[in-house]
Image 1: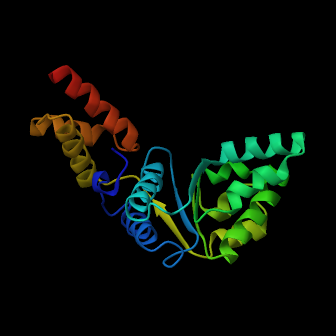
Image 2: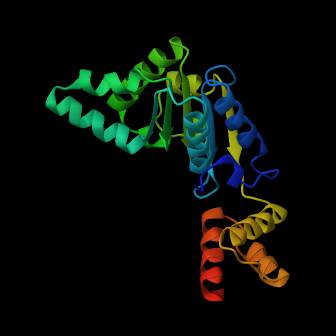
Length: 215
């Protein structure tokens, strides 16, 4: 699978996030709780969340892991409220060993969902279960998030993923090319790394395109 730790290229922009994610995967609820990763779109947050899941499933197959996007959490909650089925919504969220929520900034402006998530967070945290969250911004910068949630998001470690530096982008191009069984000339590697700076997903997409043309 692509989204494992071994396929994640580290550099100065993501070192803390990568190290914290590995620590949590190796010792859930003992290293950092919660783990809060934030950064712009396409820089590897979801990759790290999925890498944590893969490592846990490999080493601790008995663990109950729930991975949701915040949008899914919100939609399921709204449906449960409408159908009067809150208990059946809460049970799977609150009886896990590890809860991972992608794009937690989606809670902005959703008061009732924030309230629900607050209680879910407390239940898991008090039971010494691991919580892992990703967001496009720092906890304090998510608009209209209740202060009590913001403070909890900061209890463990908050790690930012920045845009990758040139050397990291070169390493990403080279690794992605190898996945395709291709070796790019140096000038092609340099051209891609120099011109696609902000988004790893775009960079990988460009590598896929060039590799496809080369075959």
